[in-house]
Amino acid sequence: MNNDNLSDNHNLIYDNVGEQYVVSQGKSDSSSYPGRDPRLAPRPEIRQEIKKQNIFSKIFQNSQSFFKKPGSSRPPFGFPNRPPNNPSHPPYKPNYAVKLSREIYNDFDMLIKAYKDLLKISNEDELKINNLENQMLILKATMGNIYRTLSGNTLPPLSGQKIDLKDNYCASLYIIAEYLEFTNEKVIKLMQAVSIQSIDRQLFIINATLNTQEKTVRNLYNECRLRRD
Figure 1 (tube, helix red, strand yellow):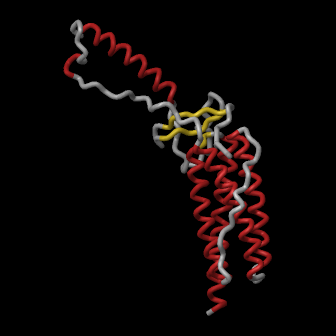
Figure 2 (tube, helix red, strand yellow; figure 1 turned 45 degrees about the horizontal axis):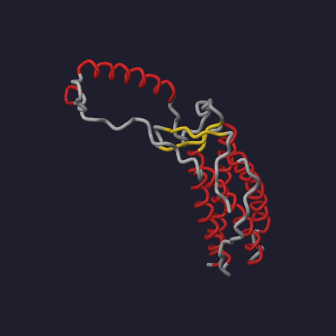
Figure 3 (cartoon, one colour; figure 1 turned 180 degrees about the horizontal axis):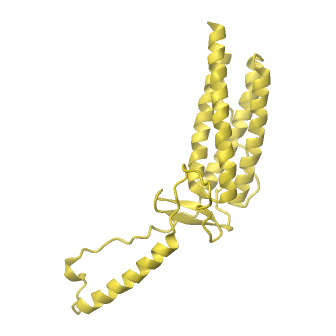
């Protein structure tokens, strides 16, 4: 059974803009490097903000102790009690990014099988389908490396699931195109959940490749329908 735990080599940092915890490498935040894709939520300089908050909180506490009446639990000047600014402790186990990388790894395996099954239905576009399958093999290996980096574990066990295709070639192309879009949405979520420069670059390539694959398969679907009409 896979627990999707985060590797000890990585930390979780709270992103105030995206309002979620993101995986960061070590104690440094590599999110501000040049060329970072705008689809990724910007990572604010959290340490400086916290330092300023601590200074102001000490000043405010000192002013409280000056104006506060003995034995009174009410804050001075009638200010209501405010909730803490810092979010609750991050959910270390299981980790969302590790879980996503494992799911995408399995999705790529299912797409590889789908391309193989597609050629069994028809070899009309054999050259293009073989090219798509070879690309997906590379994406699967890349995602396996991302999973290993995030989890510190070996490759996860494959689910063994398959995409249910139809006997109709055109309909099967449509199903694969939809699954490519579905998988790419997961990739975008993983991009937003990770702030590690090396992984970001790999995810950009994966995202771009999936966009191209989806466009190619949808074009094949449209061409298939025209041939059938």
